[in-house]
Image (cartoon, rainbow, N blue to C red):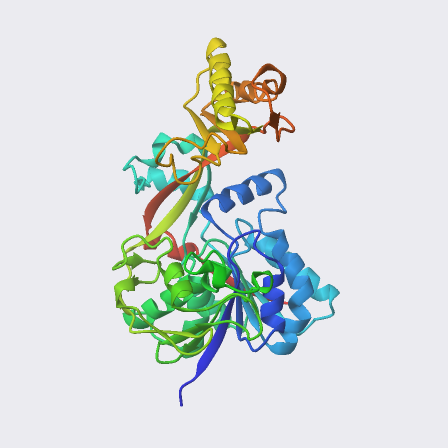
Length: 456
């Protein structure tokens, strides 16, 4: 008889809706809750936090969430897999264990931490031994920006997650995993599939990919027929019901808002995949052109027919480095002549910057309401436009010119065109953290990946 497991995707990024995991756990049957907190820039933010305080460097929201959910998770026997550990999974695991003790869950919970993805401390040794970390987009070696590097992590595969679950972990906390691994690990643990079964790996990759961005596959951010999506205030986050033959159904809890249909699943499938015939992941390669979708009732989409190919000899590495500084200022100009006023204000601020001899790598202006989203529309601007927002940003390698730019926005209120509003405090100077994608041979990572299972 066929067996299925239910995996809910409860967070699509660090800062996603905190009620979603609670509603997934309390709203119906679930076997696993997977929570994705880590994007490329997130690792750099966490690295900075740890540099200021060695006890930090992870998603603190996750600990708060676990304090709220642990009694339900234990009672309902729902297991959790998350990359909330960021660059400090040990501290994250310790915080969750402390919460469990406070809740009186001694003897009822095992927390596993997965380490080995963070290679920041190994970079110089790896480069000395010949790893160039060539940028996948530009071809440049990492040596070009090495002093500016702030974080470096390999995207681990499913093995440590499977190992942790095999050892009885109720909560698995990791740093950087390939995004689909959060679901792929539980699937392979439950069904004991072989890691060289390329089609089963591909099916797990696709299942993980569909739920990795939370409600983006269940009605949120949906382009097709978005007006027909109901009750997004109560949106149901996605669940995959995975069968032991490799097919699965995408759904959500009954009574929740949003929608799961061919459009919502298809839009998520094509999100950030590159070549659809070769979606390369840490554990294998999925051919997205082989995917077959079928609507199987309300809010139920069956996914089947997925074909795969063997994994590559490499892991992807996410490297973040300091690039420079930026600031963005805004002013709103009202009717009449809103667009003309905004254009004159833009010209004034550029001239004042030029007169001070300030040099920027980039100055960019948008007129929100006219050209900010899709570029300049055909035909002349409507002279009766009620308002236009001038949004002007600068970028430079050094902080000083950016700081001086921030002092030139507010003066336009009294020294520029009339009818201005929407101004407030001086624009903030923000650091630019750039992304450096690279590859590293698996043999340089695997020996350093460790799984520790800790009991309350």
